[in-house]
Image (cartoon, rainbow, N blue to C red):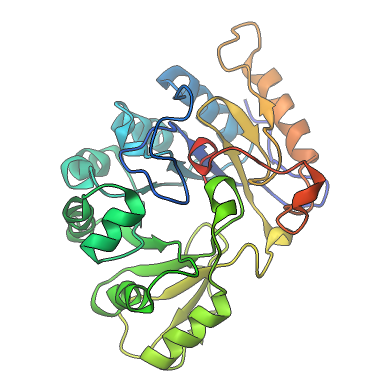
Length: 326
């Protein structure tokens, strides 16, 4: 079956799938999940995942990011990576993780074919980490980071979501990881979704000024260093790069190339739009060709832009970030 390419009505090609396989997590980050479980959890099972990957590959998807929740708590995570890598059209398989289980699972993930890993880490300070995540697991996260770097085969990025209350020394220390280690550090602007609505974002320009004062001029990198919209900069003496993903401050929707599937089986063509299209992943009467046609129609109607600046329209996403894959 070959049904691609996957385009919307604005001529954008969707070749990047963010596949959220579970909304479960072993942390409770203050901008992502409440302390207690909020309703029943959702998780995609292997046959559903295999079908999503097969059909998305036929539609021209070349890159897959496996997300959660925390994807490493899914019992079949290594097999999921293997499934993705064995879809002929899919060229790149990565995942985003908090790193707690990475030290233990890295070998299996590498054998399955994982290309790269993004590790979510908002501080290197133990007390601050416990406050932000509501868990005392910084040593495990750092062990996962070290294991990924020591693998010799995984490209590594660190993702930080700063807020207006983030201590500047925390952000400088995280940026310094890119100075001393072969990885990229990206600062992701807090999005007004879920628990993020109750917090104040840090202006990316203020953060760039802080980093420039500490580490010298930041020079724009004129080539793409990943699958997504990050703008990267180099600093003198740094092994890696510093990136900024600023969806609110600097809308990059005109070059969006991604779609999402949530752990409850919805196709979301925009992170901030409402729930999306429920995919009949368990309906045997609905064959792959019919499913591909449904996806094509939904993507054709992908909105031109998110609604971060129009919260009063009532069409934005109201669920927790952990339930939609971020």
